[in-house]
Length: 324
Image 1 (spheres, helix red, strand yellow):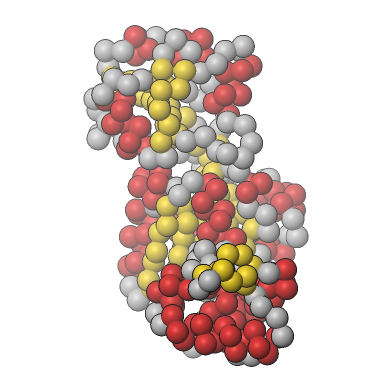
Image 2: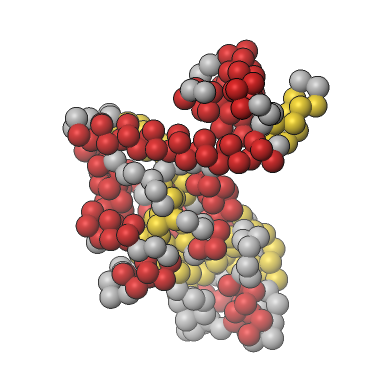
């Protein structure tokens, strides 16, 4: 067996069992992938995928075990390439990051700008999605870094590095009754339809939890993953907006009354992470520190050495994170 055979088999699994999509992603032809896969299966003595006509329907039990080892082998090869590139002081490469719309739109622009000035030959790819989608991208090695908030249970096996804390804010049009209150309560919010973020499919929503403590149920008019979409519908009068503090720009959002909600909802921590066993390039370390200045290379390496989330949390316990 050879590198390309393993690479093609893994690509098929990562792209929904589609040879067409795998070929497109790797820049090769479908016949080349099919020939390599058949040769690999002949050498192994069993099929990696169940065939239904000309398509694959699922991975065989034997195939699942082979793909597990193939993923590890390909990761080690990538690590060797990264070591060689850094030893040769090669600042070219690719850095793929999965994150939410809020981070990509409101937090990352100055970080990306600074990174591009330092590493103009590095291709930078931002993939946006929900926590579940980000978790899937990391699990299938489609990205090297993930940036998200909470939902640690969706990211097993990751080294998680806390970057900053943020809270929620309420946005309403300036003539709205809530804009006249000195301190908004959950009882006040319960009177109006709400426009806020898509709820996670894993675990309970902090929004519903906060209302439930008061014996109330929120009137959710609309959820969206995009802060700008939420603002659009608040402007249309669909309801009261609840957004991340980092997503509010006083200059661009001057038509809103911006109401502090830090006393109503829990403070959240945004983190950056990567799969344990990933070998970061020098520019990967640099991006992490540009995003979180306290995340020095030494501190990142110490987090890698911590074998579980408790060990990582203990490492950062004494660090005072900035708030945004």
